[in-house]
Image (cartoon, rainbow, N blue to C red):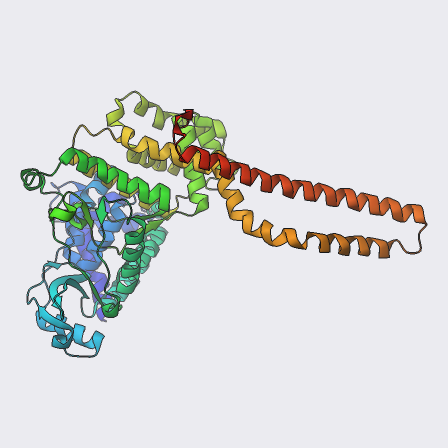
Length: 527
């Protein structure tokens, strides 16, 4: 009964806020259109549709606020006005009582809170739908931040997720737009994000990986995890002291170089994506601060690592070849890559897809370089690809969404930021590593252990092969046996020569790299 009441309330709130107008025309059953219109008598119609949807999600509670935030990232599926409005959803809710937080911490650690912390603030520093954060001090004086999951969140989330799955299935059955938007897949994606955020050990592991990756860059600080006090419900980390990046005037007054800060943000993102294939995918201003401490002045501080993006080799190859074709204005190659990747039906006409890609990309080259938006190019490509039934991969959507965030943040800090000049060296080097001679050296280096293991066994394998061939030749005349042996020897010699060539190529490549890197950069090479 409680589940039925909650489902009825969800439906009523959505209808009262005019969500039907986004799909009413695509309802496949006329009776449903009539019933939906009757349910909407008396509602306000002045507000835009995106604003009405945002307000409806806010009224339905924290789980729907999070769902709206995730939905706003799927700009490949949503109209721009709705996506823009949903991106305004704020994950700020009233804090739960401090007594409950202390009880949860004591339950997670199995001892009184005073046995863990020398001092624990009574009021939270931040409160969101999933967790809230307190400042504290460990015995010994180390200052830390303590993140605590809201009590009972798993039960609430599982209940609302079940209702979202049911509603998504119904909408896909009765609405053409519902089927096109693949609502059940979006809910499944949201399910994964939400459960990842509910496991604070996973978040701590993400933070530790980013901290290692960024250690030598000296542009961003990632808090150290206190692993002795990290559990799925409670996370203890180094306390970071900084100013939110959105407080530009305060940063400028403190002497921070705002233009450099904008460039550094782009550098950090492209390093995470193109060097590491592991990037912070929730980089809105609320999760980014700037240090004013003397030892780390002007560096970024990254927070909240519940959502990260990863790129495997296939993703990198796809992006490398697409960027290369894009910068060469080879739109036919971009179309062919979409078909070769299997993300569009094999019967798609290359010339039609090529024309659509050209219409997306060409206008961007007629703008000043400082106005070139890689995020917008990816977004338009995804939106155009929808016409051809392209299956956009979730990790690429995260990349596009984060790139838009970084570009927006960079130009908020410095409207004259030339994103292209900052990003181009990373893209060029990365593409060379993926498709050029550097890629060959990397592959040879990766295969070298296998060659080293195989070469010592080569004489034995040759002997076994010759012995086997001799055994097969018994009973045949001597000439036939000798012919077979000579053929096998020739094949073995070709194999040996091929292996020697590969090893020599690897050694020669290593010598060239060493020559370039040690004081001989004046050979005209970019790196």
